[in-house]
Length: 451
Length: 73
Image (cartoon, rainbow over all chains, first blue to last red; front, side, top):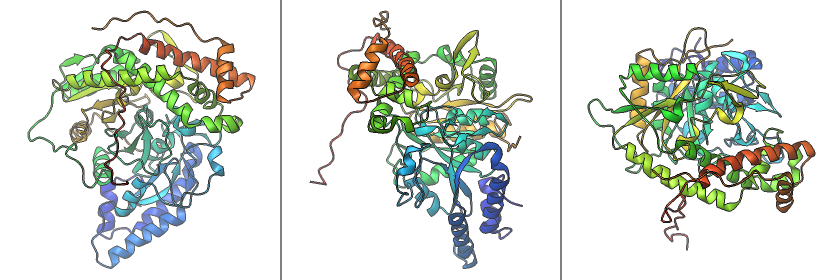
């Protein structure tokens, strides 16, 4: 039976060849979700009727002899901050339940539908995307398919769990400070956060305007590339560059600040560096301040966005989110503006490094997935708060909008963990090339798991 | 390399945070107030790092407003 455990390429080929119908694939996925998602709580809404209608359209198209679109019959799902026509856009909140259903699909869902993909539903997340653990007070935590006692990461935790469990081969999420890269790391997946502005945000509930990105999860780098190339602007400006011929790339490993992870995080980076024959290590300038500035901007923009709701119905927020947003609403303007000015400084200085290097390598998270409810982590003898610090390595990178693919490293007897491949703006093509090389070498793999 | 002066600011007092919440029209329970003070102090710790970094006066905030092309006039 062909279902969400298969790759995009396998599913589209089988449907094209008539080995299986899109309706059969969709039904198999829906049965899988119904049977197994009670373990992981990745879906908050299953759009079965719509999915079967979309699948039927694909099967009719094939029977009529017309050419099939590039994602024909491929099941997928989206973080529940994406507008789905006829469904209330929760963004992980109870408050949004009072809103009317969305009247149209988000831009990226329209893109997926035009490409023939089948939408199976909406996925769990931290309330208003403010978190790295998807311990959602209203809808329950999403659980990690590698170990359901542990977090799937966040804020796109449901998006990661659904792919890791093999319910679908791809999902869409969002990444403001690491919300694709952190769950990709904890669930052992390939996760793309493109260049800031590289994927349309229309119809997605916003969090932090300065940093919000749409992103993609997959178990295969080719699926990530295929989906991104379909969803990116059809008339890309010159900024989406063509890959140079020949072997690229000057690659460096990031040290200093990025050496603060635990032994597993550091070992994963070494494995990737070794596979790519990386010989150079460098430090990003003032990266700790970059992370601090991202933190201030996030707090301030998040607090501002939710101020009216904090004033009128603070009691309806998730207890984890409420005090964070309230504190953010109090940030003096000068803190915010200084952080935005530092952002410009940091961007200019990091761009200088890209004159010498094409790809930078860094850990995605300081440690692997931790038990749900855990408050602190001990790393290199230092105890720190778990929830904000799972993003300590991702936050400085999205701060200046660089494209990143998180690539998963699996080790026997351990939870997975990912490594960030970081490129200069609009060089996603380089990232796909390196991710594919690592996957082909067997260094970075993302098998389906249902513990 | 720019110099890093030490952070100059002490943590905000609970009474200041409470006043700022009142200024913004936000009413919280005692427990949420304590958590909000904790989070505000974390933000302030990050802000201190940023504020301690000397930036050239010529550096503008990153998001530069761009006026439209006039098509909607």
